[in-house]
Length: 442
Image (cartoon, rainbow, N blue to C red; front, side):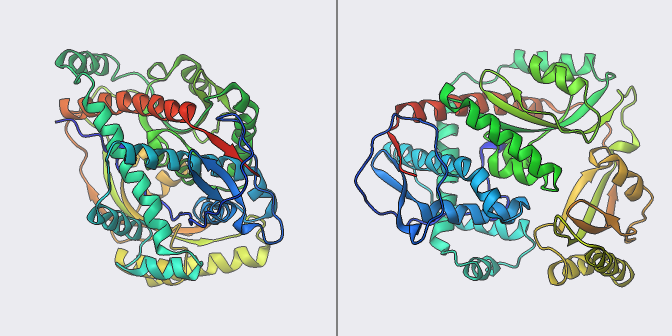
């Protein structure tokens, strides 16, 4: 059975919006006109930012979401940054309104169980105990109901896409056979692990605005914002759910305009904005590897890792860097197990940047790969200076690589289905935007 994993609920990071909607005299603008940026002003929280068909988005909604974007993307929370990205944030909220309206029209709903499961997933991804998220939201002045509304939009949109996909032709055995044949023929060719951020351009009038947004995101990432977090917040591709990660592929597996750029990039390099017929892409080459003729290699060894990060501000001074290094070294000397490392990360480090997970050695950035490859299980690394802080890694377990380098038929079918469903979702969302009445008031 084909499972559309990419169209599940996207709940990575903490972000939500409020619903302080109010009415005001309408000023009609053409549907899908470029969305302006809400200008800060005294007492402006109750103003209407946009009307989406018969519903409103307030300035308070936009500003609340902006706070969450700053938190999860590691952007500097400054008036300049807010001004630069507020247009896209408003556009995202408008899209969510359209998704909820379409779900209502199609009688698609989200159950309490589904919403609660999504909340538990957020807590797990942020190293929180069950129920701890409520306290985090309260501390930041965010109503829990606002987060529930956000998650509900994600859930119903996933259901709408799955329903539409079920009405298309199933992935055939011939398609799976052809894909496996191509994989076998090219298994020894060099591959790149690529991540993407996709920004759609549904109206030519939006082109300049979206291009400028792409340039601003690049600027913020060069200043230390994480690509994966930016992808989760801004990318309009299904891969946003996994930080934009496309996995290992050959340049020819990408669209020609994208593949040509990737072939010329080095590991760790971020592309300029790439214009395609659908919109703008930002690509990051995470790693590159030569083809393999054997059944497996050391790069396929799976590591269970814990990372603790002591954050640094973008313009950290020498004293701040020394303090972070001392904390990291103390953690290395103190923690004897991964559980102890995670506990220290929650208490003294950054709950958002500290993490636990499983990665193949080949998926790890080359510089860090050299460090973790030499660690024994239960051994902590030396402090690692990163753009956003000082980290310490510990290997919790190592698993032998699998015998086969080729995916199973089910995995290939799932990949083909995700690609088809993503194209369908883009067309679906584009049609909703084009049919909508959007009245921008800021």
